[in-house]
Length: 64
Image (cartoon, rainbow, N blue to C red; front, top):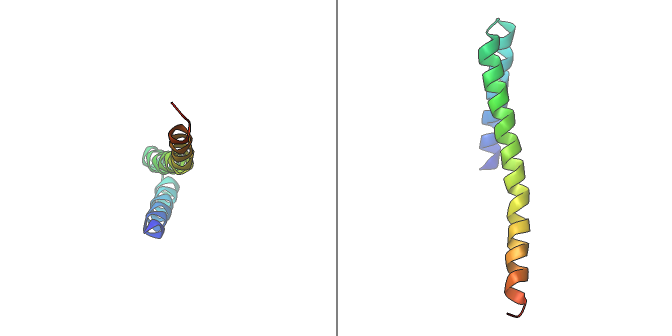
């Protein structure tokens, strides 16, 4: 499932590279920037979920 998203991101980055080479720099920056931003957000959420689960588990194990 995640490999589909990775291939899609790779394809969008390739399109950004081609559009940049053709001179459409605004489109290339838009595509490349959005892919990198989405990757960063996904990485932060991927790291935040186990931390949140650990905090909830710790909160449930402490006495009131």
